[in-house]
Length: 323
Image (cartoon, rainbow, N blue to C red; front, top):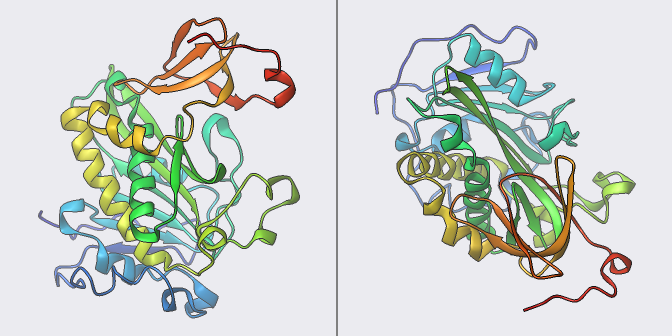
């Protein structure tokens, strides 16, 4: 891949924003040296009490990943918003935006996402697929979640799972999520922003009271401190590879992986889609990334999008499920 040395304007909102062009020296560690170190010294207090060190991330990005420039901000309202602004200014695909903390991070349905400094990974990747319709990219969020969960399982050994359509879980508690948002022109994807948020080194008391029983982190589950730079580079490498595979083969290439990681089959859930509310048992997803739910009367229904909640015991008492 040819790396560009053309620089975009240095970020204006934050004086400490750093533009990190992909240099021509080709410096990077060999695989198995730094990339194998996913725990331990990488997160010991250093560089502003544990601030992400972008040079370490840069060193581990594979040339095939296509990341050609990195913007880093100690504090930012939203990496997705910044990546969107850069895209409108002409930034190329492969632009990566990271923040140590976000003040207005958002998940699906514009829900707030807590993004503490020195604890997690909050980043957005600008992608520019060519001549692709929005419908073809509709299930990319789910594909990205499966890729992220698989990568985290591989390097931590923790039972990271996925919850439709975009959540990452450990033992039923939320670890993070993926969110792809599209900008379209004339029924074509002009650009796409893939945002990721992962709780890495949060302690239990880092979460507000209302989330303590719902959220988790790699540190809580693995009882160790993890190297955020190594995990970030691994995630970006795998997400870029997954993006290329998605363009070639669509969601069907990720269906088996999703099914291996899926937390939902057998769960009694409520699905809300527009004005509809549907109760039933999750059975999985199909080759286009839609959720399949079987009602308690035996009806099978497909949801390409929607919001799901696990049914409480009182809601499901008395229901019988037909085979």
